[in-house]
Every structure is written in structure tokens, then in C-alpha cells.
Image (cartoon, rainbow, N blue to C red; front, top):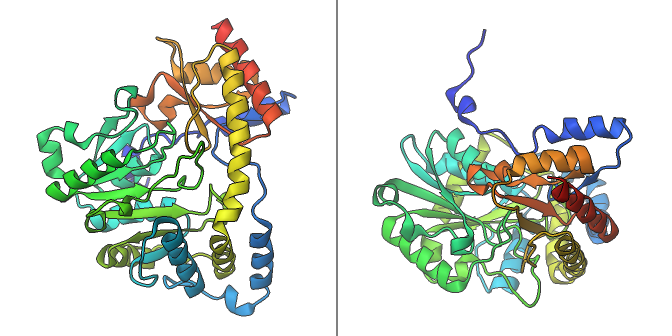
Amino acid sequence: MTKLSTRLGALPGYPMAEIPAIKRRLIQQGVDIIDVGAGDADFAPPEIAVEALARASRDPAMSRYAFQLGLPAFREAAARFLKRRFDLTVDPFTELHPLLGSKEGIAHLAMAVLDSGDVAIVPEPGYAVYHGGTILADATPHLVPLAPRTDFLLEMEELPADVARRAKLVYLNYPNNPTAAVAPRDYLERTVAFCRRHDILIVYDNPYSEITFDGYVAPSIFEIPGAREVAVEFHSLSKSFCMTGWRLAWAVGRPDLIAALARVKNYVDTGAFLAVQAAGAVVLDHAEELTRGYVSRFQERRDAMVDALRAEGFEAEKPRATLYLWIPLPDGMASAAFQRRALEEGGVVALPGTAFGAGAEGFFRIALTVATPRLVEAAQRLGKVLAAV
């Protein structure tokens, strides 16, 4: 029998792995399921994206290999977006690279940067690819709990001295999934300063930069002086433009780091479908007007869901960004047990905090991915489950 790798065995269980089977069984039994688990909104993608994809797909040249160069027009549109949005000037061909979604880029950058014995600082809770990508790169994850005490900010100054000395990379994600926390400028300034002192690469995962509310504007890490020396930032069309399945994103950073990422990718993929990149270029040139419409609808859902959850006894706060609510449970209540009861007894798919790591116990996440009436109904069902516990 083939022996599987130790890397595979070291991977933690993936969030939501068992939920589809339970959900399918309940649906077959006639249960009405409200799924607010995955961060995959039900809004249609931009019509201009669909039209651009249809046009491009009729061009035979768009069905050829993209390779790592990809479509120059997409690179250039991404660079224009960064300039408009963050006043960031980058070379679209040496400081920016197209990705098949930011997830693969984050994992492949770890392979380009980390060696066996290196330490990567991994927030917990956090996106599973931070932990998993570190393990697949044969490096050592150092898990750092994100807690209300620090407003869910990963405070580098609190790292043990030996960890800071061995660390080569840190994953930061603000606006944050799953906590919806945002990073003040002074936090980013001291984090960049710390990483410059200790020669630690910041992997700044920024897919929610455009989903912000109440006047808040999310920054790029590159707005912080000195960040270009120590950071790579990832942007995605998935969340802001409701194009999750299109798998299109980009990384931006120093030429040597972007070249290293491209070198790894040369051996694992041949680039995103060129017609999708053509559609992405059109979207990015109209980003501001497109996101405005999506954000207003997310805000309506946020406000209605927070009110409904509060009415059911949950301590829900209105986040300033993302499409998530991060809800604390009563002391001593296990999040996985609550989520299982919510699904089995209430027909609601939510994610327990422990789906994002053991350090996230005591919370659960709701994604604002279904219509407002269904969100309110989900809150009412969750309230009944809470009352019955």
C-alpha cells in the first residue's frame, strides 16, 4: 500500500468538510436549509463581466494557454485599480502577478519562501490556507490566538522572543475573516516596523478591502511607509464582485518576491483562462461603481441580521467590513456542538469558531450570503436552538 506523506497527515481538518453530507441528508428528508456558512454571496456577478467573458470566449486566441504572463490587459487594469484606490504605483509586469484565486497564490508563496525549520506566524482563527500552506511548504506554523482583548489584532510584539527570531513569514488579513476586525493605521505601522526589524515577510491577504461600511475605508499594507520592503499583498475578485467561481486574483509586491511566486506557479499551473482575465480587466476598470451596489446590499443584510440576532439573545455587533458576523456564544457553550444543533434542529448552516482553529472556540460565523428575509428567519431559528440548549 502506498504510504502517504507526513505533510498530508499534518494537515488539520478542513472547515466545512462534513457539512455538505449532513446538509444533503437533511434536504433529502425535506428539511428547509438556510446556508449562511460559506462566504459565497447569492448576488449575480456584474453583467459587464458576463458580457466581456462571452465576447472574449468567442476569440480562439483566448482559449490558448495563458502561462504566467497571462493577459497583459488584466495586469494593467489591476495596476490602474491599485493606483486609483490606494495611490499605489506598481509595474504590472514585474510587481504584480495574476492568480487562480488568491488562495493558491498564498499557498504557493509559502512554498517559494519557507524552508524546513522556518516558522510562519498563523492567526487563529484564520483562513485555512495559512495553516495548510505552511505545512505543505514543510515549515512550522506558530498559531497566535486572535482575541477580543486585542480587538482580534495579531500583535507581533507579544510573540515569544525565540519565535520572533525564527519567524520568516506572518499572515495578516484585515478586514478579517472570520472576525470582521479591521486594522487601524497605527497597528499596521508598528507591525511593519516589527517585521522590518526582524526580517519577517508580511503576507497581507486583502480580499475584503472593498466591502466596508459606515464610512470606513480599508487600506493597503503598502500605504504604510516601509511596507514595500517586507510585504506581498493579495487581492481577489471573488468577494467584492461576487465572482468566487471565476477564480481570478492577483498578488503585488517586490519584483524578486513576485518572480519567486511565478517560478513556483510555472510548475503547478498554466494560468487563469484568458477570457476570464479579459472580463476581470473590464470589472476592475469599473470597480468603484460595481462595488458600491454590492456593498449597499450587504449593509442592508448586516443591519437586519444584527437586529434579528440581538432580538434572539445573541450579542451581535455591527462590523465595519466584510460579509461576516462573528458571534460570541454563552460561556461554556462549545461552538461545534451549537453548530451541529443549529443544522440538525434548526436547519441553519453556520460555521463554528473551531472550524477556523481551536483558538476560536466560543464563537460562530454567519455569512451574509442569502436574502434578508432568509437571514432574519435564520436568526429566529438560531434563537430557538440557543434557548433550548
